[in-house]
Length: 616
Image (cartoon, rainbow, N blue to C red; front, side):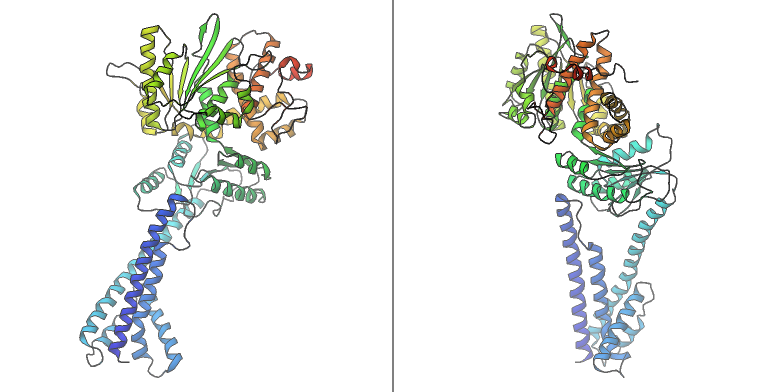
């Protein structure tokens, strides 16, 4: 084969390899973007840049092969010559990446027109020059990428005495949480925030998130949260927030980290805290099943957290209206999605207060939302509207097949004689605001035409910008008149340290729990409270109720208070899906023998309903 033909063949193969590498890296980048829409946690084995780098390297080796095969190994023959040529080509390519490649070899070979046609030599030389220029640029990219990762590791290691807050993913929620962590003035300790699994892409949203993280002084690491170190320093807090969009991935990471921390004495302490964002029933069962040692583990059920926050900060009792000497709480809940149903259930137990009656008007577009609630809380529906001595009383009026964007919705509102407060929970910020304003229009008309009460309206609005806009004096019209609409459930309130960790509420709940189980070993009771969400959720509900009872009820008959505490507990248990069946308590079957009227309880059981009169 002539050298000209050899060079042509080498040039063609090199160009094809490089073109293939470029194509594959582009396709892989697009595939990653598509895949990310379905599962942001799973990534391909090789990044697009790595695919291109491998192809570039092979293309350069192929390009240099004729040079060494032709001129530098004349004494060698056969297979030995091929191997040596390949190795020397690889050697020269490696030198290219450190700005030490020799171009003279190619120039001398191709300048001899007696061996290589001038046109072929010119093309070959230009292509080789491009390779020589591109290689150091690729080296710079690799070096910068390395030092970016190394600088994050060094910064992470330079703060040995700082409490570390590690967030499993960089997203809008985790940025809000990080801001609250770093600006929380109640915490005087040094704090270091770390985002994991961060890949800087070209998308505008991702770029903005990375920029915000850097402005906060946070560390961004590419490694997954289960792969990074948790610091060897003793006596610091290690707080881990598994806050990714994929709930299944959050659970998998939690199980891995719990086992790792439990088996490492330095980490197996209550100063290691893991917060898992997951709403499913499955997640609670899995976290119950694993031994977490001394590690503090909390499942963050965002719906439940928002309900507790709403009950605590937007009292349904404050706007009760007196009718015939009786305090009437009449709440409209518009939209029975996940949050709306949880709110409805919570109002049923929280409203069991001496001197108060509860009515809930539930609006939804579905034809039979009552069946959906019955599926998760059968006895809550079974006892709806039934006045039985010693049993909780509440009345839920279901308004099915009602589209909030139709005039029929306003007509139904007008037909209700009294609404003391209203909650709009349709799952969409824009629709919630629009519906809240429509309701306020109708309430205003009814106040003029029939002298009805204009209730406060609470709309769930997630958007930070909309919430901030409404926080400065509320929503007003051109005459500076207040609509009386409050935005609740904002991203800032949902993803604050207070809302997630709930230390004060957990302390109050523990106090209630210990009072209830005062007849058993206290250490065992505290251990179960910290381990099992069931006890915390139940006791926090009691603490919320007690907060209102102390405020509303003064000098009441102790026997009456015990009866109403039993009513509250019965309504709460039914809202959790429990039923009264037989004489056996079965937590898996969700049956409880004490879901009976107060008067049917034994004196011993009645006395257990004497909950604390204060939380101090």
